[in-house]
Length: 209
Image (cartoon, rainbow, N blue to C red; front, top):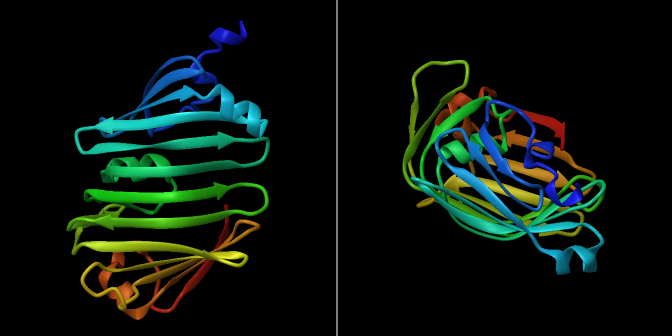
């Protein structure tokens, strides 16, 4: 029975999911937008870390992304993430975002941890020119190529979004504390360039992961 636990036990239902197959050890889930995410259990890493470890890969028309994950009682860690993805994958990962985007992305994330203590993120996301719009509707906003960098120093991770050709022109800053507290600040330049975010210039909102 343990060997045949269906993947649907861990792949929760939602608008992001189009189908699921296999088991929790080797399974696949369809993602809204046409991509598919598959994973394969890594028994040795699971034993060493006393947690569920797996290698995973997402594939689709504009997606070819892979990495490793480690799921513990209170946290999830991903590392060695690299490859390309489209906006549909972003929607699947963060369905609560108030906007949707259509733009190819190159992703390089050496390590990220969510949940529990010691939460952090380091890496880089580089986009091609594209467009985003508010989830509630309205016209799409064209965007140039953007770069999102994440650096972990001390007890916090700082993420900065900027145009790829003007990296000192910060549009948005996100600070992630180790307890999961997140402060998002939109600069005046960011409010003008990213109206679909829905925040006034200089505004900061605090959330928790």
